[in-house]
Picture (cartoon, rainbow, N blue to C red):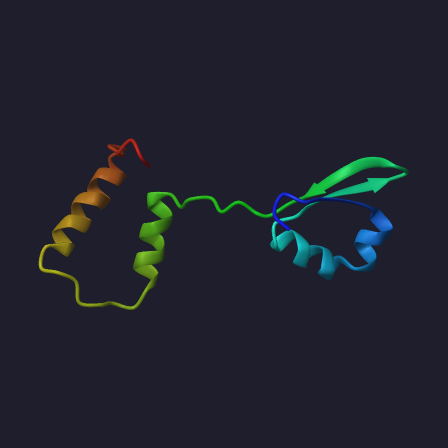
Length: 91
């Protein structure tokens, strides 16, 4: 069903919204119309990559584990660089 475009009325979309989401999840796009005019497009979500700050927040929210011997030093360098604004170009 990839790249399939569905056209349906707002009433039809509302009537069976769960099934519509199943089809979108499978790769279809849906154009929702009202009075034969398109008013919305529903398509598969695109995952956005996380920022370094979000990755750090997730890491610190996890229970402690046993890292390699240099991990603490590496993390201190990352946090220091982040807090001083010396961010890598990929952040």
